[in-house]
Every structure is written in C-alpha cells, then in structure tokens.
Length: 183
Image (cartoon, rainbow, N blue to C red; front, side, top):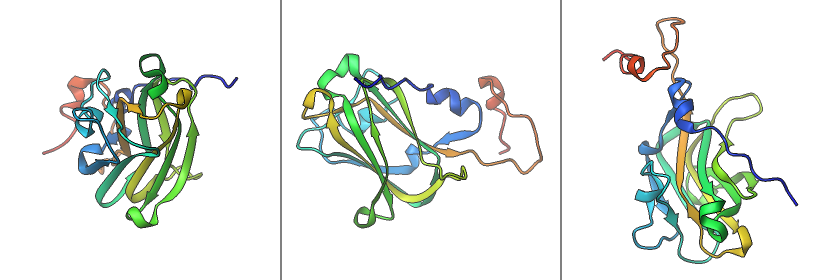
C-alpha cells in the first residue's frame, strides 16, 4: 500500500515570511458543480470546517481565472481524509492556459489519505514561477471510489515583489509586517 500523503506547512506561515503573497482574491473562481451552500464562498473563507462539495459526475473542476497573465508559484489545497473519507480527492490534475480552450496538464498528483495542506509547485526546473491567465484543478478520482468531492480550502501564491530600497531585512512578526510597505 502507498504511504500517506504528508501534510504540508500552513500556507499562512509562508505568507508571514514575506516570500509569497496569496492572490486568490484577484481571480475569478468558478466550479463545475456544487451543492447549495457548499460553493466558492466556502472554498475561500479561511475556515477549515467548511468545504466545497461537488454535485455531479467526475471530473470535478475548480477554475481560477486572472484578468492579466499572473506569475503563480504554488497552489495549496486542504483535504482531510479523516473528516471526509470517500469525499476526499485521491487524484488531482492541474491544468494551465490562456482560457478554457487551450488548457494543458502540467501536474497530476496522487493523494493517499491526506490530512492537511498539500502544496503543488508550479515552478519550472529553474525555479521561475509559471505565468498564466487560468488554472484549472480537476479532481479525477476520490478515495473509496467516492462520487462527489470535498475540498476545504484552495489558496494560490505568487512570489512577493522584491523591494527597490536595497537589501532590507524581511519582517516576520505581525506587528512589523503592518509597517512593511510605504503608502
């Protein structure tokens, strides 16, 4: 039997380092289907107790569209096998492109009983983030051959812009981060 998918670090900690920035709020989100009250709002509400629940046949799709070509470093998803059992994704595909008509698969991931954050890197081998107008996440299969799926959170990250004032130290505490930009 395959080993369990290890839980990744909470993405909020990565944000506090100042190296990445969450850009999901800049995107237009759509779903292939959802049960009433279990849609995009629950997928993006920063609450691990709520979730998106699909309602229909597979693959279940999460579409993330940006207004301009955007650099994307990482997509993070939160899945919890203990809470969701057969609703938990077991195979996920990430596709990118300019629109729905030219999407190309760049990652396919097998998840084995995930219990936390799963980080999916979209960097090329040289470490440069992928630039795209659209990301489509497709849930291709669920654990125990489940039909509908639960995803508790999805976050999209871009590298933080470097400051032009030279090599100033990065702020890591919440109090200092409040004053880290010039208005």
